[in-house]
Length: 294
Length: 339
Ligand SMILES: Nc1ncnc2c1ncn2[C@@H]1O[C@H](COP(=O)(O)OP(=O)(O)O)[C@@H](O)[C@H]1O
Ligand SMILES: [Mg+2]
Image (cartoon, rainbow over all chains, first blue to last red; front, side):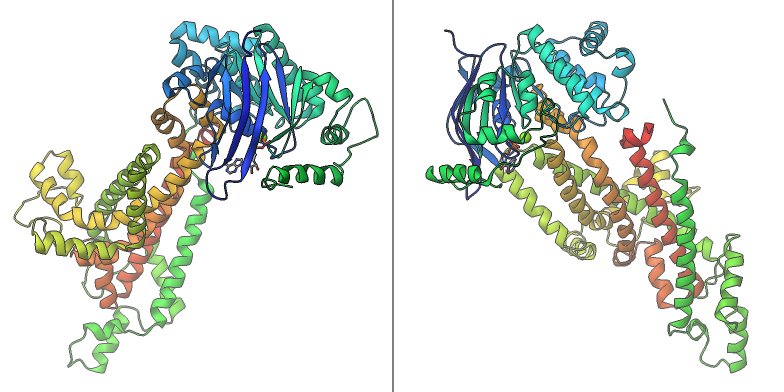
């Protein structure tokens, strides 16, 4: 078997300043080409930190302190900066969480959509515009020419997210990090956007790291998943298998805490305190305190 | 898709401004007349009889009650007549109008210096990877924030006026240089008429007071802008731009700077109004013939009409600056421009 598209092994991260609180504790996961890999866990579990580490956009306050991130066999963490800059944006792209802040309020959406094509492919003029229109058609925007000239505040959240999806796919990357791409959207828009990401991913054969705290979403889009708690991998495997019979109590609690449309009336269940206590005990066996939450 | 200029003008603020100005007029008028200090006493000769004093007082209307005085004053003020200066025996508006250009040029030059220094250092420290540069700028900024304008003024006088004697320490222009100018905007008119000798001499006179006024403002601009640039740099759009392969220089100059300037500008406006307050003492130190210096003369002489006129002019300047800030928001922020 050839090298997986993405192979994270033993990745650890911590706060740069004392007391160096750990944020990721030896996380390992692999994503095959064309696979959608879910990263699940409650807020603060370290999901975004993993995504940002892959994309080299960790905030200054956080540093990696061990492990490797191999992309098609090459370690991103030790790669020369110039090579990394070439890979990011072309081979690896991001669909961000909040479409309200992911577009620059003072630039027209068209120019932001085509940044990659201009900077990386050298496209310009009529060819660029033509390509931009095609991209927007792909994400089912009906009047692309008008939309290209608008500013972000002039379009809806769902429309913005579609533009960001189009931008992420514009250079046909091999891997896309989707960080809670539907969390900030209305429920009605969420489904549509999810379906869109799934479709485009299939057409392009893109591998996706899909960050979410919503197991309902995971069931819809992810082939495999990794469950995180406090920066630590709790469970990993095929989505269907894990959702059917979770082997870890925390995963089961997460499943029970997810509102399900097919089990009307049951509502959400809080995560039982005992399970969280177990996990905390497990964390302290590693010599860590739980990091900044719960 | 341009919106007509009138729609951009903040009419509501304009109305509010008029009310504010009226309030300032009332309060200052009453305060000036209840605090001790008799303007007539400052102008009479020692041998004047009580009748002379009474006549003089009546001629300036000072024998009436305060409300009556105010109504009379207001009636004239709305027609642009602010009375006659008691100490200088000249029309108040005429006096102020003659001095205002000097202060306008000085503060605008100081503003330009502050913006260039403030924005420049903020961008530089954001872009610099070297710890040393960042630390140097940070410490320099701390000092600039702590030292007030008049201390800079005195320091400059000692350094460049006394120790090195490379810059003139008083006045606005060398009297030997003839200016047959139409306005009192000597610097602007000198630039327009391409008169390097005039421009050079005026700048030499202005450079020290302008820097004294500019440095504290530059420090504030730098502090606010740097924070805003850092915050903008962590916004998703800036992270995306980085992933898309834009350099930090381009991201800063073309993406984040413009957004970071919006909060900075608001604060610069407020601080710029403080700078007009600063002109009072800095102009005095350099004997610079502006309205700040005039204000001190007016207070020393208990020159009520002149003080009253100056207070209103300062108030009006504050209001105009705030309106200008609001208008420039509309230019920087597409949400306001198209919304
Ligand atoms: N800029 C930052 N500075 C310091 N700590 C941070 C920063 N961003 C995130 N963290 C910490 O890192 C941990 C993981 O955060 P994150 O990866 O964003 O979680 P998730 O995406 O799973 O909600 C949290 O405990 C959070 O407090
Ligand atoms: Mg997150």
